Length: 248
Length: 205
Figure 1: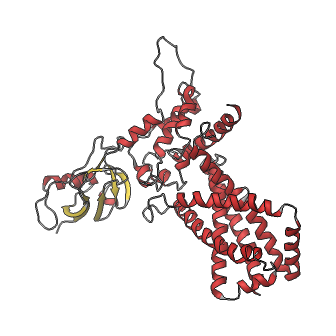
Figure 2 (figure 1 turned 120 degrees about the vertical axis):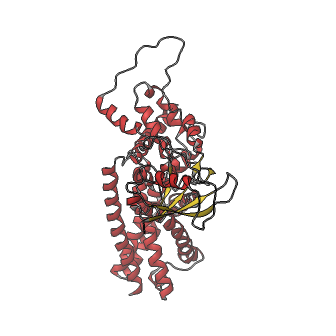
Figure 3 (figure 1 turned 90 degrees about the horizontal axis):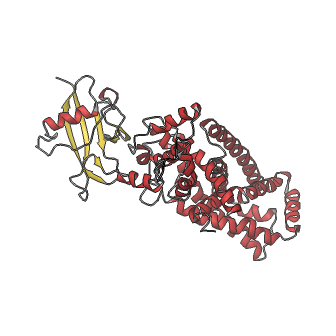
């Protein structure tokens, strides 16, 4: 009797279709990850009842936890399927889509809200102009090291999925977006447009929407100090608002 | 003002500030004043007389207690019902504090409404505020249980709110500062709970 792995997948046939659970039983293989398990289902899409069904749909790309495409909720926790090893998950595994985002199909979600929000907070360094403005200021090494930590974000959306305040009743954009503001405000040339980004995150869509549950920093697969980024920006906006209120 | 600073920024920061000053400051004053009941009915009634002898006491009540609490409560109820549930899947300490902060906020609102009805409203209707009044209110186990829950809930909401205040204004930024602020809020919780419950039991004994 070979070892079997049971996968309980929350499926959905389309964006407006109702979700349902389907169970699959596959053969265990050493060193298998969740992606490998899903590939087994794709090879032979027969559920536990023996019915032939449409293979489970999911997204993946890098397979080394740097792209974020395969993010899903595994055994109740949002993470990447590529770095989720079967040996560490047990013999019964639940897979669900990150329902904070609109579900496209099965485990595939539409994370484009994060791209829209990055545009809202101007998460870029503007350098284009009508003439050459020359090289920017140099960056101190300690700040570069700090900024590097922040720049490791892959926009996987796990911090939005685990955040209680990223909900249908709240406008909060999420920790990843706040972190991008801090990253671009740390950049010496980006800092020249600091105030524009701070203005974009001052309200309840931004920092004030954060409820300090701090799930983001616990769940972030890249170990980014998200709560420190948020609190640091809180201090920036405290200073900025006092300055603006008193002098403008 | 709304054109200078975003509306939700002003209201959320005001919500955070009012929770500490003046509401939190009043809570500490109120619990310490009540603690004089531990010294007996005469001590308690002397404290009550002293507070009522202060000039502008009604104005202070309105601007430092009633209006701040009404604003804090109104926005607080909105905030409390915004989140989606992330428990027990993400059962981290801070997430529990997040949940409890909202839960105790709602409990505290119900408790304060009832407490104000039983004491301040009755006083306005002519009932004298003295040791007897509290003794009569607390003459049954249901009231005592309600007051114990109410006091602990209020003190928790304030203590944990101090932590949120420090984080929300950017005073505690890094993990170390935030952890130390957690210790501060825990000490405040233990101390104020002791003060509040000792006063409560003084009325029962």
